[in-house]
Image (tube, rainbow, N blue to C red; front, top):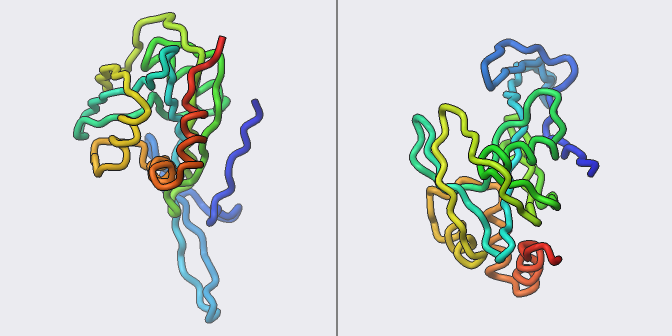
Length: 198
């Protein structure tokens, strides 16, 4: 599966200089000419891209994660995390699914990819995974606590759209709202989250 990276609406120009290198975030600055001919220093952050996976169990339920991480309130999410340097996007999705759920999947569907924040060079890729097979125990890092939580699609939609501050995947909330408002979008969503037929 070839996955194209969406273009940023304000890309970091080639002449930008990295002025800070952090563990996760790098800061870039460049001189930008304004409309009146003056110049100002512009700045943008870059961080590793992220993958999110919503796994669909053979019975049609969607496997969510109740997560805790240091310094954050507990939250509900798909399986996911950072793409390692040089790692293929799909390979990262497969790795995160396996680490955080213990499942492998026969099929991955790219549902969404976007730059969620204009001043940050960062893409979130959201997948639906089907044809699940449990192959391992969870392999969490020291900063994760995860409890797996099967959910119906209806419950997932309600969790995402009824003001739950603990639903983490803000990038796709609008898709759930669209489905609630448009019967055609709801039908598409139900088709997307259907389990893999054998």
